[in-house]
Image 1 (cartoon, rainbow, N blue to C red):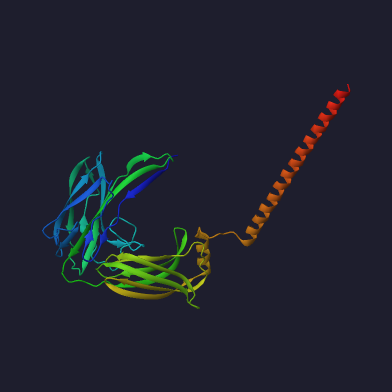
Image 2 (cartoon, rainbow, N blue to C red):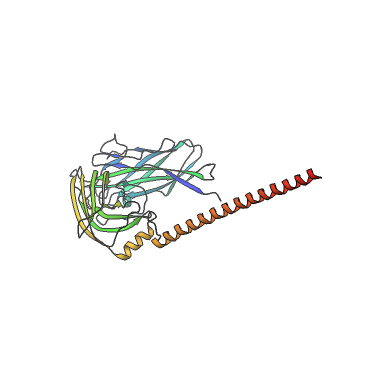
Length: 356
């Protein structure tokens, strides 16, 4: 049965305090989105909506959708608040990231869009999203995006039998301001836990930006050590991280392949520096015996063989090798004996023939 592989050809939005960029889609993408800016646009040179708004304001956000493909294109549309994934990347498309409790101005709920829209082959379609700013006033910025995702475009089948389906995506950024006053971001660190990520043992620390402002160009240095004797278990550096306003993510530190995490108390020491500030956190967490055992069982890089099982396997291999050597030598002896007997019989027969 032929397996199907869907490849999502989309790159992430890059948002910042002073600039926001729309999705830069791949060269072979058939989908394009061109915004038509309203009079409330702050800077028309940007490729995203950066709007001055008032509480309760209503206006249309118009765009031209382009299809460079040879077939009509069905596009699925959604409006979403900005969120942060566990890699420190801001996302604007539909995802499973929960909305942070600190978010009071959800752009995803302020924008109404149709579920789907069609674009003719080698053609364009005019698209309108309706913005209804919430009546409750908000400070700082409210950020989200309008996401466009095409149906899977059935592609060619490789010689391996894998069918390639291309799915194109484009995210249009939306930033709302009600006041020129800026708000400084703020990071908090909540729970720290040992967990399994993609069948590898990891330490995750929940970081939260509870203010309506971006954190950009963030670099970090994280250390995990035992609480009792300060023995270092894990150290990791990261850079170029971003955090969306009023969002949270699980800062993830991966254990080395084959490394086990023993039961006990540990300390997570994380230092973070960004353009907007500096934060330093220390938090103790506990790994129970049951937790450690579960992590080891789920870790594909850890051998789950007991020492006696490994020893038994080695002995079996040695015995098998001895048996093979014995059988080979026995067969060689038998072959040599048969050749000798055959030669003897042949010699006797020859001598009898000569005597006659």
